[in-house]
Image (cartoon, rainbow, N blue to C red; front, side, top):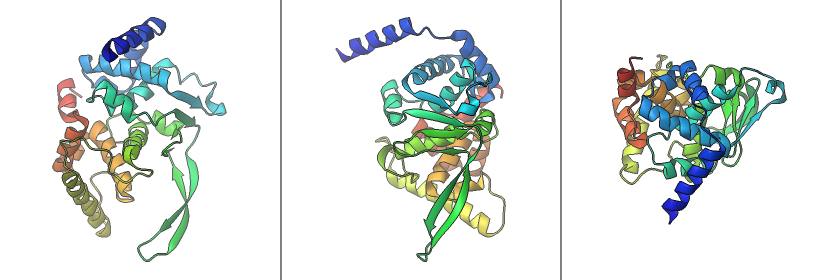
Length: 268
């Protein structure tokens, strides 16, 4: 009965909102990250992105409302980058993962937040943090326009993937901690052990004054470590695999995807 109801809803949506094939083709052509997805997965990703756009509120800052750059292909591209995270999951798991997303807010520039943090000695520090994006448990996903426009390549940077990785992280807590809800076939002890290995390596490299193999922002907080690693997993998988092969394998299991193989088969 539930399957028949779901099929009826899908058919009704398709009748009311015909899939914009040409706009999706244009969206994929603009972003190497989306162009690398094979045709079969690309079709499924496009339809998920289309439904995502109708299920979530997309809000532009007044300064951006008149921008001709944010056309339908650009909107589909934004949604598809978010949906890429859950492409390997079932439709129901995909919907559940982003149930807490109600709005995506796009601001014209990076923005600042005053942050209070307590160090290991119990001393409270206050500072101003400049951000390209922001996510909270019930609030909107916020991204800055310049960083959104810089996302979608294969260089390890993607503000959409970063912020929506935080949303996955928030699936079992009120704050990001680098420990999202895990499927039954991933042992939480393995997750903790592998991520702690990456965390410790990043900390040690920074203490020695060395470059880090991924964005050193990952060393600022366990939740940021997860989000930065997700960025690298999808948009620079070769670098992540080379630096942290165990982590790559863990994320491949978690996301049920192999971006390294996908890029190799696409010739990117």
